[in-house]
Length: 224
Length: 224
DNA sequence: GTGAAACCTCAAGATTTCATCAAGAGAGTT
DNA sequence: AACTCTCTTGATGAAATCTTGAGGTTTCAC
Image 1 (tube, rainbow over the protein chains, first blue to last red):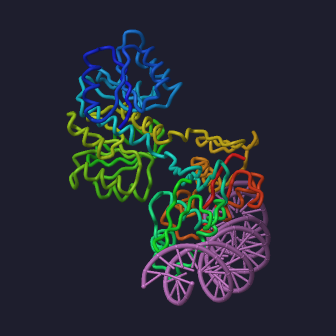
Image 2: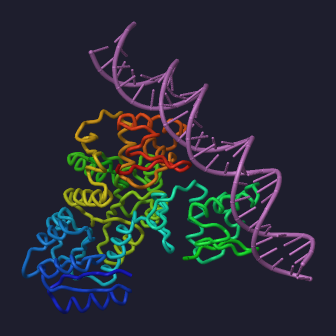
Image 3: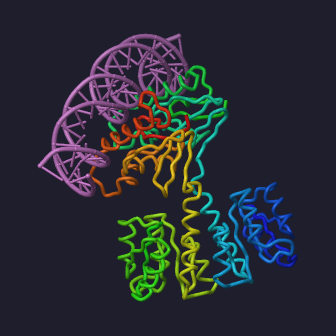
């Protein structure tokens, strides 16, 4: 599910957390000191960091600032102090969330899920098949690094075929997905657009590279 | 600073929070019931929602789910229950953070800052793309160091496009974000404002520098 | 093989979408 | 009241895209 890095000096807690998170499907790695943790975060690039305050070698808030200067990985702070004072400082220092010790595994797991959900927002959706790739948000298609100039219907057709790469997609489905029903147009129209798409992909129906027609059924996109 | 909507049935707490947040530079509006709050969130589009549990007309978690289904506004839940159980449920239901009642104004303020920072992650107070930069707080846009004289709608359009640099933004989205729904206006209006913005950016649709129109879809802002 | 059905491609006309200008309304200011 | 700034709307021409018809090619079943 996610790779978690735990910075915590108490070996017993490390063991407990690692066990609980592993059971929840996460992969846990840990450091026993602040400086060690900082290095590991830089080198391992975990998805989430769980940072225990009260480390022997460095103040937690200080480490948090250092982490923030090198990475924007979500950080969940575990603290024994329950007063407003310190939590305010931590959130301002860049913590994404915190749990109060002693914390339950369920609670930590919920926090991890929450920060991951937040972090995964806005990731670019890109599809790849062979030397073909499309970025849906940017509405760009690249072939061997070259930007393709596709018309709207062509792009949507390609997107549909890439989303279902390897599967045969019927023209009826293309009409439904790209043209949106109810549509009075004929399937000839799809043929024409497919032809244009092929031309831009540097192929022809007789010499297919990506778009294989399956006679009587439809078309499937495959890696060359 | 930020527009906060407080959903809370206790008038005294509403008064206290509104006062404290106003002192911190935020603008606070409030509702006394769940259904009222839901409607106001939809119509007013606040930057943060502070939701009190234990409302008379609806369970807080239920309202949270309803909120989430219509908006991704950050929600801070205020709860009297301090047990792991309920906080886990709330975070899973989509809460961004929570405070335990009675909470201090400083604490709530820190949470608000934290969720705002998170919500604006990747879109800090100043945005840059190529030689273009805008300072959202100061409402200033600079091109190659030169201050641009933009009308309100132009600035907001530019801000939206810069926040989503590289992504295609549709005119419908621009209407929703910049003009605020429900809006009867036509998409031609957007075209005109885009044209003005282009002129001030020293470009034209035929010779784009930053604003690329993606025919049939929308416009995206890219570095030249 | 042979014929029917399905498919491919081209070219031209039809349609949709865009960019820009210009006129006018409304709000706020001088 | 005249002025400025901003926004909305309609018009116009241009550009990009889509659809359709027609002719040729391939595939499949018999």
